[in-house]
Image 1: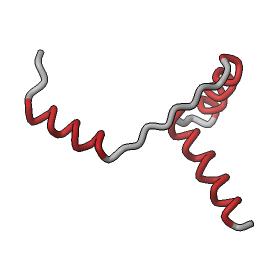
Image 2 (image 1 turned 120 degrees about the horizontal axis):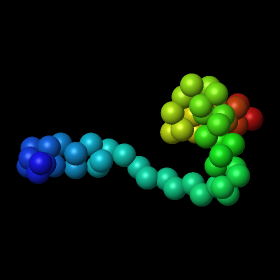
Image 3 (image 1 turned 90 degrees about the horizontal axis):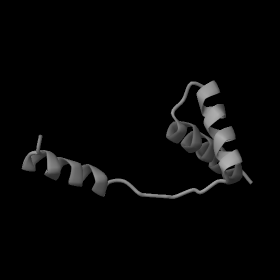
Image 4 (image 1 turned 135 degrees about the vertical axis):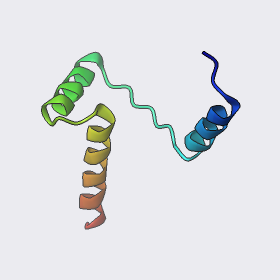
Length: 62
């Protein structure tokens, strides 16, 4: 099924609001990160973003 023009426009607006930051851990590190996210019952993206926010907050106080 083809995507409607309205859906394409909506997707483009949404994607325009996002940044893309690529992280390339080793396979072992990636597996550890995925396991930690699963153990925390979070998505991988949510887990990583939370960790970054927490570190940024700690470093802001220095």
